[in-house]
Length: 73
Length: 393
Image 1 (cartoon, rainbow over the protein chains, first blue to last red):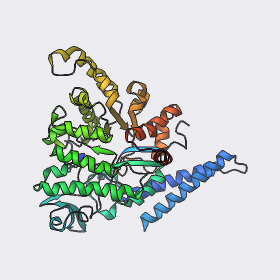
Image 2: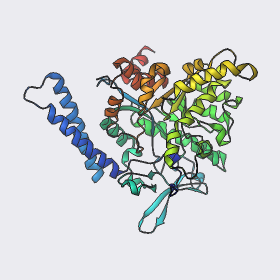
Image 3: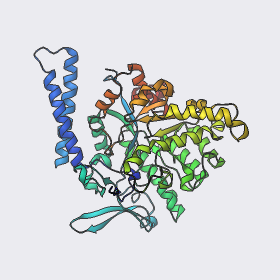
């Protein structure tokens, strides 16, 4: 059986960070999810609770798109 | 939906990356060449590596990238530069924007270059400079990082651990500036410091009691000698799997230490170790205490489980077993964390993950675990409560 090759650095220091690339990928995935959630909520006659949820989701979606744009620049 | 929209998530274990001028902006001019500073080392075919230099010692990286953007077969650790990080790592305003996206109201950020509890300064040749560096870090946390959004960050400070009296002074100095917590080694003996069975720490613990600041023991803060000793040919997964055992060790030390009996108001937070292991180790401690206390120098009257209830709390990111056993652990001993900006966090969906974790838990208990317990332990009232307390006071 092959021996396992260890990572040479001591990552007990726990400094594996979210990079721009990784954060961008995660934002892309979450934007897709939230876009779907918003579409499901939007129908011709939303109630007050649904309207509040739509507002919150739309605000978060806009913030995520802005963050993704900033990471690309 | 047990995690209600009005519940504010408070994370008690996160991290900040110090910007390059944290120490250079704050130490006297004569120390700038020796204080921590960023140096750039050329690397063929790549941008230079950015790393910290402190006195004449080089520390190999400012952060690592193990998995991001790679196929599993390409995993490995590479140094990252500030340019590679998301700004929320080192810029508090960008951090707040990332917290908003993540649905997190407030967080407590541990240091990175100084290590989780400032033990980098134990290595100093010049302890006068080391003390200035400890103070500079704490001033950065209080005057710059948390000052950017005081209702969003719980300030946690480091100590000059090599000197108990200096540590006491730093606790009082930083408490007067608004510090809320102290980061402390999970296994101090592994760093060559006295253990928590030693009265060396008495004045430090008294100062923590007087200021109401918990000691936060992030697992792994005892250094490489304290980590589980795995086989050289074992995959690193074994180490990751065992990380919570450091917190078990810390808990066992405290439950049989004389110090908690002398410091009845001391609060201890176990950071990032999870909570599912707590029922076992506390029950085991009581068995040991019942059978073995008479011939050992341990308290004969108060069972370890009682000390745990009085003093210790834990936190978790995802721990289904711990949540299912919350009544045995104590709902009021559990807090939540999201570990931003480390890659094992669930950002930008931490709130969604928390909603899944708490799906079968009553609202009132969820509220305690995600918000109210942290506000109580860390004396961190909601902004509107803080205003009304100030008005009354």
